[in-house]
Image 1: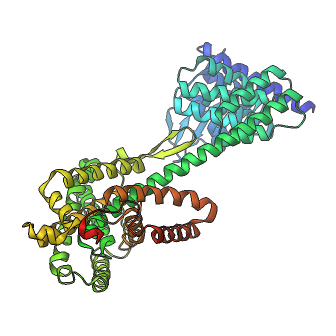
Image 2: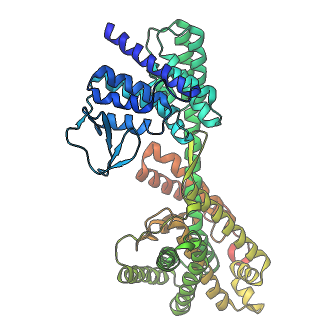
Image 3: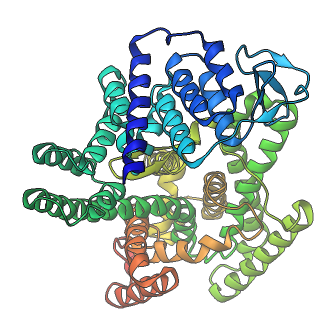
Length: 537
């Protein structure tokens, strides 16, 4: 008990020294004299040197104390010189920072005992809390929140008083609250205020901290902690539902992008295209090729690689789609089983062709800087690539709606969808509309591949992962209806993400499939059925 009290007193002394470094430009005595104390090979001198160096404000303070902790600090007892050995085996003079060719003969590592290790840890924590880098201060404050070491209280309070960054200041306030909450001699009012601060944080770490609070607390403190835990649990449950909803919207945007082209071809032509997934795959490989060319020849354009890949993927997949319609599908209209088998065989041919050209392994497609990273919204994390894919999907959907409504091709497509014979009798070349429609649907699948390359493996099997889900979206939403496809994609995506935590990924998909089958029994035409004489016949 007596030893523990001495350790606390030493840590408090070190904190006072660190606190003094905020206002004092230098510690009494020169920095070189403090460093030289390491060469005395006395634990008391080493402890004194750590305190003085930590309080000096010298930029070499952190490297010296960090090297001491890692066993990379050596001293020559004759010359009183101290040296730091870096991770790259380079040696510098600890007092001046100048490079040294090699360690002189007679140097030996500076020794540590358990008490000194605690002192060194406290010094390093204090130096990081007072770092000029806001990111390091934030990380240090979060570390203190988890450890809630009482010895860091003085430094935390000093840093809190001088902090200007809003996020870091909040982290310091939370770290101070965590320390006070576990401080034996803290007053009841201080602990209640600390609980309020930790409750406002509202995350898993806050709940874990309150849960670990001992049972020997005053009644008001224990009651406040229990209420805070209950409130945090309720808050986390709400944010968990929000997180699942976001994951569902993100999945729904992917399904919509993959299914929207299928909805067009299926609705206008009545063709079950089992090779639709391979159009997605071709778009992803187009992105890979574009990025490879940019990496090798124009590396400065990498951030624009996706913007370049989108029109190229549309043209590649759309052109192949037109060739498929003209070369195969046009001879199989009215024969759905033969069309299904032909397109399924075609999908295998396309997969093998890609394996022959690019190999069977996954290909790397990088994220541009504007699609990398994430940000926190409350208690959930939103990645930029998923957010951009959602925006991209909605933009494609809006452009496609405008095209169908305001262009002559869109008018002809809607006419053929509602009544093919009537459209043909009005002079519309239905065979041309079929070819362009299939090309449009395949092109949209190609740009879906560009987006999917940012969140999935680019491999010959990429399209197969989405073809079944795409068909479910189209059938559930209503064949040929874009608004139905939109609603169906987001409904199935959100339902899937809410079922996964309960039933698991596989059983969740099975449950979705069963629900769709039951729904189709009641509404065979889906959520939004197309209207027209031929459709209703």
